[in-house]
Length: 520
RNA sequence: GCGCCUCUAGCUCAAUGGCAGAGCAACGGACUCUUAAUCCGCAGGUUCUGGGUUCGAAUCCCAGGGGGCGCACCA
Image (cartoon, rainbow, N blue to C red; front, side, top):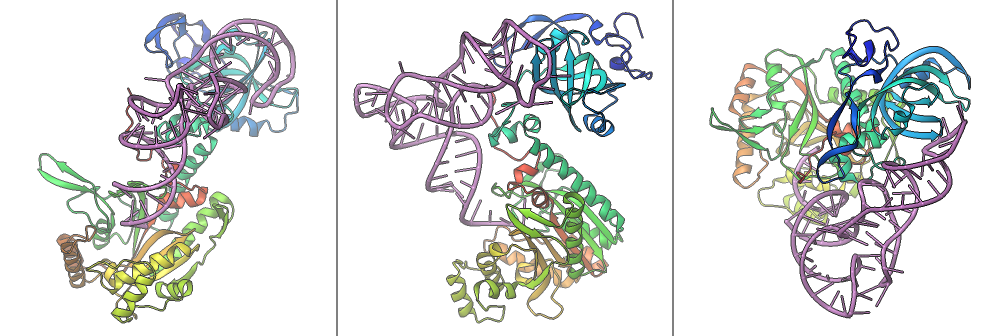
């Protein structure tokens, strides 16, 4: 350590010899004038106090707020420990008491009080001039104040970064939703709930990976650029590759690539895939969202029902401690098994309408019109049936319920039902009134798949913008042989919404899609 | 894309046709155990923008912009 130039000793300048305390004061460094921008002023200018301490390049805090709270839980009020620690974080609150000052320091684990006094804190005057929101590191003894608050009794401290902008009302935070989503960095400090939700999202995703790996699933990555959109009915985003001079589509689903990998011998694969759909925004829709898709050889759609309900119930138990949860104030029981019912059963149960694919066309049209469904040209009975279900029944379901057996006409990638002609083995699970997942016994017959694609092509020709394109390579893959396979796609954003009791998808996405902001 | 609602100080919000305000933050000061500290003082505004009605507009009307919700579309 050079005698001059090292302004903060071993702790703040790095090196390997962390001794557990400061060798020198962090204030020993030279002071340098610095031009700063005043965020509330029009232009750059020198501040009234032109000398600032350059922050250290690295430091090694040796304690966290939560760690101290746990370790010293038994310390009595007024108690001292003799233990010196260094903590770092943002100063969120400060309470001055003449020659004493108390500050709330927040790090990623929680909050700890800093206890400063003119008699024992270096540059006490500087300490009380810190702005709310400044990043600081502080070293001192762990004590509990006479009023019972666990504290670091600050002997040395250093400012790590200044907060030139405020984090809003210190009690009420930032409530303007636009500001919260655009300036998430501020929202995360101002609103504890934002931090909680996004942290839980991260933990849910990593839990999902571990849970799937434990069952032998292999994580893979498939292309986001697709030469043709496939695997779902949705409008894609289009982009262009210059040197190939081809248009490429951002994927709307990883499905067809994942099943190619099953053909290739990956018997259990999954991908936590960001997918992109060129659709309107809503509290439940973001143009890019995260979908877990997995495929399991030798399984059918009933295996997928078991898988999703065990996964969701396991997550609830892990993160909420129970499968009896509340969403939007309504109780919801996520414990497996979930109810299974066919689409036609549910339509009858909720609307009294007795319809299925065998219903006479005129009767079906009459029922559709009575349900408020506007039948469009080109719709077959399967599409009409699906629309009737969505109009009359889906919103009324709270669930969880596996809605089984969809019309073949609206399910070009699912395998024919083993006993119900015209239907396929497909289910969607409705949880809290929303579709959480979509799963099939996968269609494995290449000839049938080719025929389904032809059917889609006809629909596209008659104006259905979301009809699937014919994917000849996918059919070729099936010709090599796809074993009987169960597959499922689970909307992870909606799952996180469910487990965090969030009513907006934007709350569970750190940087949701917004109209671009004009900053002048 | 259509409909409804909304936009006031850095933040959170008042003021409904009659002098634009409060709390917090900021700034100055007091205070040796605070917890959203307290107390005193001081400052802070293109009321989203433009137009109109009116003696007078944050308030009413029209147009535009941002945002929210609903519809449509979807998971």
